[in-house]
Length: 440
Image 1 (cartoon, one colour):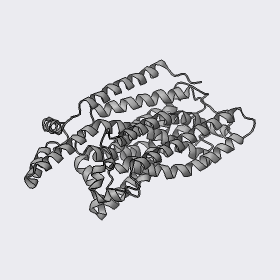
Image 2 (cartoon, rainbow, N blue to C red):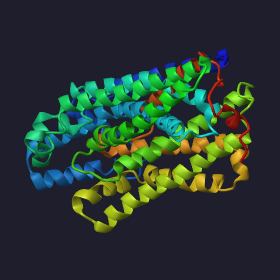
Image 3 (cartoon, rainbow, N blue to C red):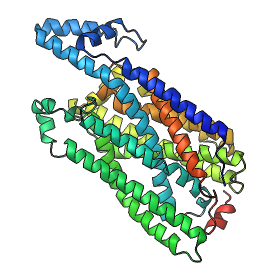
Image 4 (cartoon, rainbow, N blue to C red):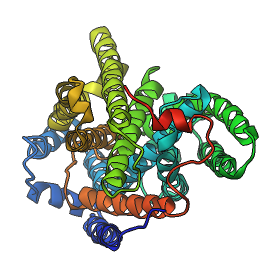
């Protein structure tokens, strides 16, 4: 049985405490009036090129063209909403990122079950421990969505009835993008994912004490059915929770794009936790070939993510259709460093670091690569959310770091506590001996 070390537990609690302080600072420092927002932008110089410094120039040009006080007031109110959205968006990005990791692990676990893979059963308890975070992580995301519907923030502009009343495109999408249906869909997604996790976990534990393979067969059937449900709901979730932040824009590749990010992040965390547990002597039968295969999946899904990123970017950029290309124009103009930086972190680094087969067997090398990959995919989620919620008023500062610390601490606390509940090695999985003697 795994014992949750006090040092790791205290570290997780400290992270959460620091996160609460950081998030609190972010919420306390938001402007409460348009005038205060305007003054904050005028006084603030955070080194993001000239984007913030040019705000005053844009305002002056707008005023000269419009020549009305109403235009100035509307601009200032929009600016206030962007600044008020920043701490909410920081929390939302971090909450979704860590939930995405757990959901990616659940999908990978279901794939192993449905494929009846022989190499991976030794890792099933690690995967089941990580997916335990689906419950608190899902609740956190759902609460943020409910608060958005209740107008505690302005992250989803289509939730504002006044905006929809003046926007013909949003009116046309109102049958799908409406608060009630939005929350119903979210509840169905979360309920289905958590239900599969709980059923599969119980069948997995029951198999250890059974005298036949009936639980294993049931788990196979549940996993195969879940994958159909997952492929549909994951795409819809990505449309709802991420793409609808920019409701005028859409991409038919977006669901797959989020899926690739989810999978590589989840597999990376499986590898890192497996290496940690093995270093503490808890997974003696896990060998270098298991780590090699996990690193191989990290490499493969990094390439798959890059393929989808380039396909989406190239086709939209080349077609140059205004309502499509504006998505990338905004990110290249206002988010140049994180936009291109995450491509380097998510593609160039994994390609160079994991291409060599020997390096996939070096534990510290895999962990180092994993840290780079996780940082890159956090920035990827950041790039997907922030331009539609805060515009060019972005920064990676106290609110963002605080939110990451809080949810990272909660993730570590919940996952490692779940790992203490049962033995880390299955007993009666039909493929356990094949997994124990797996060699690549």
